[in-house]
Length: 113
Length: 113
Image 1 (cartoon, rainbow over the protein chains, first blue to last red):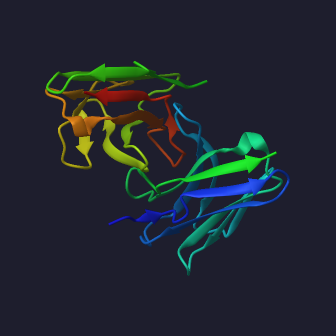
Image 2: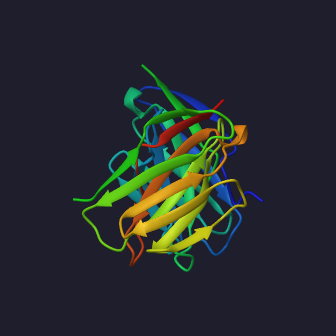
């Protein structure tokens, strides 16, 4: 049972345009949602998070939107840059469960110059 | 500042051989520690987590074990490796209190031949 799903394995975007990465979850007990960025042969790097009491969180070019009724979140990157090319993982956690993260399968973003 | 070290970076082991991967965290006390695995083309799967010395929780039945002999040391082991143990192993930490994103090490690429 996959509790966090990223249904798009890959996404290709032109430099300067918006990148939108999507994520769906099934467990209503999740109260924190995160996005991580990963380059090959490296560990994931934390990008941005959102708690379940909010519907939007912004940090520079990165914005995460949360739709609790739909159990859906998305990451917007504007404007996209070639250096953003990486694998992006959505993750969720429940503070009542020692903060363990449950990850989606990842989406590979390619930003073309 | 806190840092996490994981070694070795790459490892090639024959089937049936033992395994020991080590992870240490600096600059913090009483962290929560985690072992994740990323199999080829898949997301990150939580294998073990620990909230204190000698306290290990296993998330999935498998051929691996974990130990935490010291506060900031987390070890992943196997007595006899299987081909299916191949993957990218990641250690992560978070503060022992409150909510915080997980911070990952750079991972170990294990190939079982």
